[in-house]
Image 1 (tube, rainbow, N blue to C red):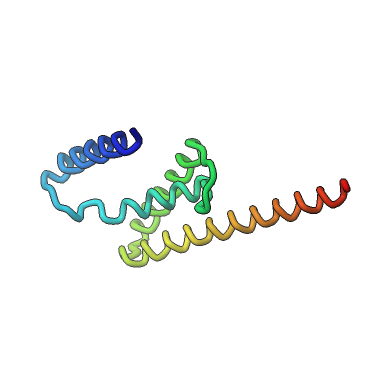
Image 2: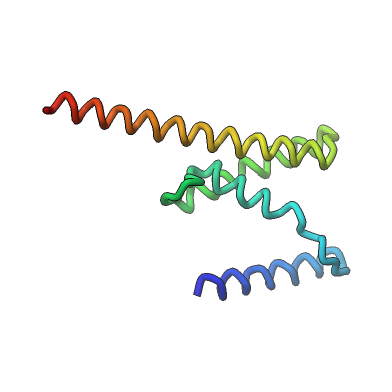
Length: 115
């Protein structure tokens, strides 16, 4: 069911994009998957598995949108935009791992104090 919904959404976006640019090309949405991954990771979903929230993903999408618009307005090249988005994803994953390790240490410490 998830694949069917994903395929239907992709087809709809393809039609909307084709209508906007009045043409169709296979590489039209090449960098969109990077934006989607970055939005989900910034929204709080762990890359090592876990549960995310829709609200967090929406906030992550807004942040990525602002970053993209800001870099475009500043004249940053497409290559460096991808590099910066990749660094944002890496930073978000590192912060998530640091937070998980800190929570595990605190839980272990609390368990040792209760014994």
